Image (cartoon, rainbow, N blue to C red):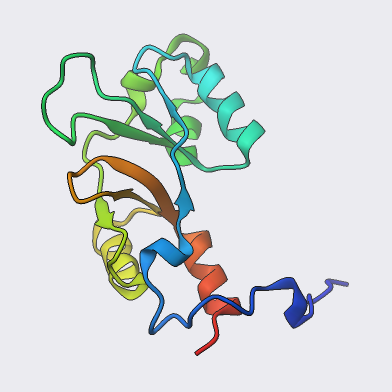
Length: 147
């Protein structure tokens, strides 16, 4: 038998899906690794921090705001038995989908659907990563958001 949590389990302070912005729903700050980090270490980072993605830091000397990537739990599982011999750079997606912190969660959901991804990197006005928003974060807004 599953237990359905009471309303107290959610937040009475979060806006509804139709009015919330990304900053309200995102996980602030990023958990990142270097491109040469082993996938075993990336897996440990995910498990320790209870997250489903790790941002791969820009290569030293990179001059653009999007010279970084992201390793998701799906990327990690796709590596299969080779994971012990691979690095974050070997499996990360460099085609990272980003969203601004002031965008609506509805827009974030549209981007996720359009790009078939479960994580967006939230960027500041200079294009630097400042957090991550996931489908689980959006589910929380749907479940607990208030008008």
